[in-house]
Length: 132
Image 1 (cartoon, rainbow, N blue to C red):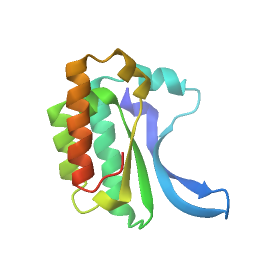
Image 2: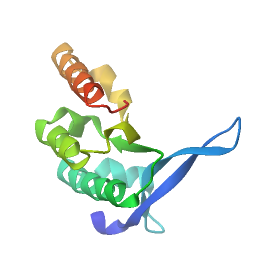
Image 3: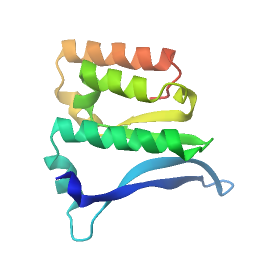
């Protein structure tokens, strides 16, 4: 499934009031003729972890000093392994990374226990210097 990804790119995020680049969103380059939403919907959690690792490699190697925006699925964020993987790979880059929950609409369906866990994870990440 990940063979449909041809690379990772940095999409500039521009502040409209002054046309200055304020950061970059880390995105996957998907091969032509692929339904992008269907592709990401069909990815397994393990494939998301692999993709996230590739994106984090881009963060480390980019040398970009501006804010970097990375999308993380809720399921990966809630898994201890996924969170530890993310935190380990981003050590030293924390203040430059803004985590976006890719499928935040799923939070409506979370149990109170899952929501409590998510709040704890967000708190840990904020203490470490990440923006969520």
